[in-house]
Length: 577
Image (cartoon, rainbow, N blue to C red; front, side):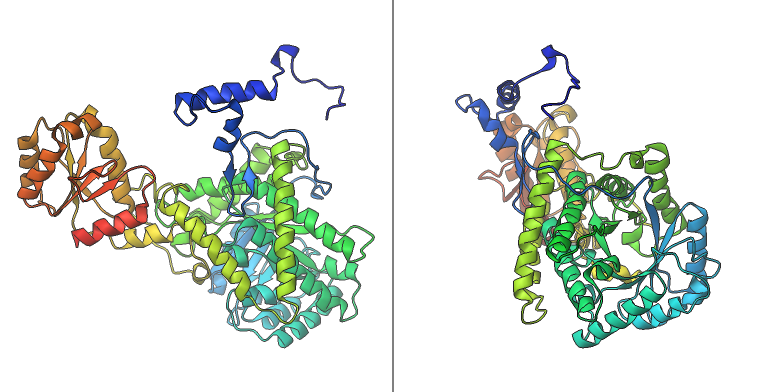
């Protein structure tokens, strides 16, 4: 604030925008990302990146723009929510009790028509621990079974009704029956002083939706439920109190923080336009993204989950679920569940992230991103409202999600969105944890799916890595191309240090004599003896020659920074077959 009497910097530490531009431009010119004739102000264009929603994110937040008027209502620690999804009632109950004893404060119960709700929740103190149901194929049966349990229920418990989310996931559901079911269960939930509805925006996220699309979906679904309930006689205020929202938290921490903050702003605007006078806060449940989890090198998921949970807490989520790191491998085991709940304890009890309400509030970059996301989310909401005027046709929305998926996939294929352990730094020798199949994974296409499909069926034949020169000379490119090939399930046989063509060919002949070879060395080595080496290797039996770097006339393919990695890997595997 310009009128604040508190000065945090000495006069000599105050710098102008022009000074920052000059200092930044000097760095970019050294790295040749900015030309000598380019103005210093060009650094903004060079360093600004664009989200999948087309929102520009500048390298530096600057004063100006609106500040979010809707702060989190959560005071202190967030609700640590554990997902219980084991079809075996005894195992599910054991997992729930262990989690509750370990500091979890609420249960998210995934269930179906075969779930024994009473056995699953045996010894769970329902008046102290909220239970949120998730039973898309048996909503009424599971809700009735839960309501029939003796004793009072915690007011934050929720029957988890979300017919629109169920239909978006392509689970068959009749709209008229769903509306009647929602109204009936909402009335029963009100009688038990609990909530009835969860607007599960992860239904869109799991399909690949962008942040703005996730926000737009949540508003459209939330408004539809308000209409269905108010048509049945409830006031808008009472209907709004029946609704909880579920959003995905990813390892992109600033967009996640901004998304949760924008969601509160947008829902407050919806209620304002609906004539609600007394404020009804949006209750938010954030769950770490399932699509961002990798099956390979799953321990990296601990880091992804920690960043996502941090962002959810800073963004003001009322409840946070950290999915266990081994979720992508199947149904998590006890170790994965323990690590997941302890992530929340580390953030709350040791890092004190929950000690400050809205700690990102007032940060210029976060406020700008919040405002931009809110505008994009509102635009998506308006599109959905128009499309749903004559019925709930999800095809146009799915088509927009597909366009976002295509953009994301292109970035992942070119490794502009690196996936550690999958597209970057893969370990072909790793042993994956064995887990029972988890049907919840069938709802999701993970970001790493294309690379993981290659890893699932590794190439039977390695590529011969024809390293030119000493180890010091070839190691940079050899390491680069080895990692790239490993991302596609392709191993390498390395020639090692070579002083000339004869040594290189001898190493090739002593190896498995792969049909595919890859030259790796310095530009000087390529110029000096690259063409001769390629020719000699062809004479020795190679049928496909790659170069680590930009392709030249004497090779068949090249592997350089920015290459479409998936296309390159598929081409290489075809030549190896």
